[in-house]
Image 1 (tube, rainbow, N blue to C red):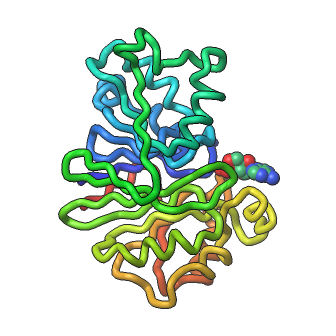
Image 2: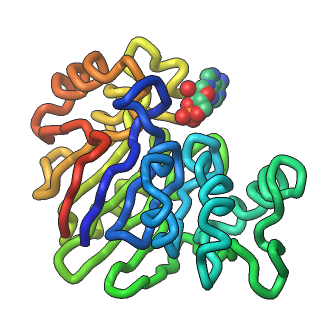
Length: 255
Ligand SMILES: Nc1ncnc2c1ncn2[C@@H]1O[C@@H]2COP(=O)(O)O[C@H]2[C@H]1O
């Protein structure tokens, strides 16, 4: 499995900053933030599945736009996998015929551009040999992370989350974990904002990491634009034994 980081920043601002979108092989997205906009039309049309962590705009910004571009080119609906709570939010506030057309009924209810498929914690969804399972997360709106399991190992993506012991319990149970992607949105100087917005700062992440470093790579996502050096310096000081490195747009990881 090939994981290509299209975007992993906590915001926008110039070349390096695209919001969350992880491309799995050529046919699956985890989140559909602004990183998706860099794919050309053919690459967009090859995407059959989107697994959403939550409905915040930085994670779904390109979903309505890509549906408009690829809908007429595709023979089948784009399947958006998410929890029931996230589907309710997207139907009420995005695909509502006001902010954007309701592509679950357009061009026709029988052959729409978009189909929701519900996926809750405790369930899994196989797309070929790649198996997606929601992981617990704690954010300001209903949110999950994802475990992606393959025959050659697994990765875990925490999505957006503040302190969440259930996530770390779930991660500890993944025996063949190769990559662990977790957020650290703010530097320690903005800890109050991190807590209020249900994110992490280095001290909060370090307090949750296991005593012993695992045999997986620890990759950091969702750092707010302009705070990358400060945040990663603090994280290396607080959790150096875990050798954290920052996830970057354009990175490719293989499983
Ligand atoms: N009190 C707040 N609660 C939530 N988000 C906030 C607040 N104040 C500022 N924000 C920002 O709004 C952003 C919404 O997207 P994020 O969750 O990535 O990060 C959030 C913060 O950067």
